[in-house]
Length: 142
Image (cartoon, rainbow, N blue to C red; front, top):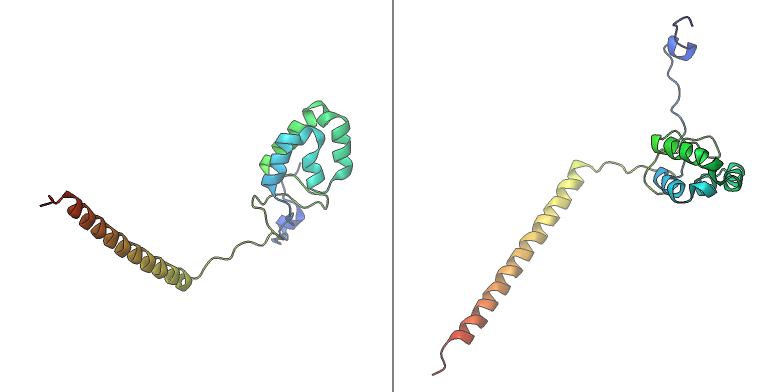
């Protein structure tokens, strides 16, 4: 070993980001824990050939199953197209939620403030009505 970095790092070039699978890592991990001996997580991630082998050997007598659980938990498991299964959320196409603008957040916060003040007014009105009912029922009849 020469101690040099690979050419892609040595030349200062950046590698393109690794492709990410559309499959959910959370679902795959859940399937691996529950039905990993039968290869359910491999069917889910588009690897049916190895899933059938896993099913026939009951998860490689438990060793293959344990290996897959660890690899899935670490985020290094790959789907049938060679893409890493890293997203925890379940959704379409891996579209991440865009951060809201400050103006949008301010508008929503003002809406919440309005709703809370309306609820406080209603609560105050209800308390006054209840107090009147209690006063009438405690007054001596004469």
